[in-house]
Amino acid sequence: MMRVILAVALVIALAMSAGAYDILYSNDTAATHDAGAFGIDVGFLYLMANSYYDEDGESVDWENADYTGMWFPIDIYYGVMDGFEIGVTPIFMMDKVTITDPDDEYSGTGIGDTWIWAKYGFMPDPMLTARVGFKVATGNDEPDEDELALGSGQMDIDGALLFGVPVGPGSFDAALGYRYRLAISADDDARDAGDWKPGSEFHFFAGYTYFLNDAMGLRVGADGFFGGENEEDDGDGFEAVENSASNVVYINPGFDYIMDNGMSLGFDMHYPLMGTNIVAPWGLGLTVGWGN
Image 1: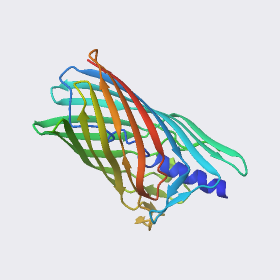
Image 2 (image 1 turned 180 degrees about the horizontal axis):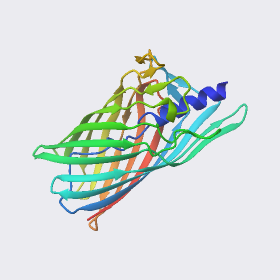
Image 3 (image 1 turned 135 degrees about the vertical axis):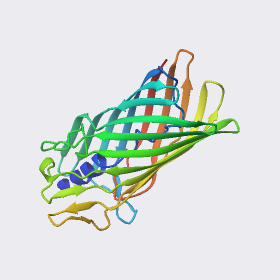
């Protein structure tokens, strides 16, 4: 029973939440590229967790289980016109849950859910940018026995405003958005209870980059989300599930280096400060980018 509880908790928390790194919000800025610009950013994230936040916001340790994950988000963008760009961000995931006493292991490897997005910068100084994103359910949400889900089985629609302004020897960036989460049909999901609608979420990011020189910058920031109650439909209409809302706040220090040939390197750490009803792994990230 304990194995089942742990596995289900991880599947729900990781597949249906932003996890340690939200690829739409973490370290994104209001900056947009010129017309014709094309680029690819490839990330590597190593995530670890051996606890979760309960409904009271208390961190609860697992005595006989831990989670590790390696995620590879690939951000591909194209500048349609000055100040307007489109992009797609698939993610390759390698997740594993190891349980001791008795020994067991759950794993999942493959493509997770994919974001398709567009950004439009409508004010240059200070920078204000609107972004809209659509999450496509490309990840497997009905895994085989002893496997972990890689997707949520439903679509999300995300809209956000991004802000950027020079401050001293650096820049301040922030984003605030709302993510509307569509329902999961019982016919398309392994659930037996009926249709399920995960709670919609307010997302945020705020950070400051201190420029050491023209090529290097130190970053410190925070991001996360605050979600509403999940809802379930057992045939009589959707009703909120009491004490099911999730939220989490991370700090994200990092370092960026931009080279003359268009290549860029970034390093990040993601550490949870607080949360509710969520497995909140901490992790390290490395990003390699190229753009013309």
